[in-house]
Length: 221
Image (tube, rainbow, N blue to C red; front, side):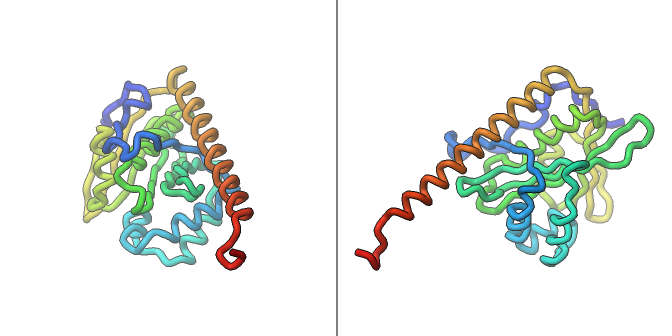
């Protein structure tokens, strides 16, 4: 019997480490089909070991391209954390599995660029995925990964997930409490904050581009 979590979604997982820069909060935004190119850029930037940890095997570029092309945003949920240049520094994929009677399960996978690690991005995306799972009537959140995937194992253990090991792989299960007003409102506010943050970064990027366009070049000088 998996342990039932009665805490709010915000309490499921604490940050792995304090943010390196308190002025840069980790805000998780839900992605859509309009973000496919950024998703592809993110996954192609993963090296062989990171691809192994994320997908369970070292996948070539064409497999990643096919994976991104076939992401079903109408069924699954994909979350992202954006850097200052609007690049995806972290991606979480919540895939809804076929229901078994009254039991609904969702599988979570995550990847974070090496340059952005140590900020608790993986934990924050797991927190958001757990919240969305509760709010969409999922009773069990599931993780499958290699047992040497220290980041995923750390997230699973901190969340109190039941972990089963077999032949170098691990399956982790977390039973979720039903949605309540707190979880619904909390997710709404988190999404609004992430959307606002993205808009600010986009405006800053555009302002920088305009400024650079009007700056005299070295050749002109």
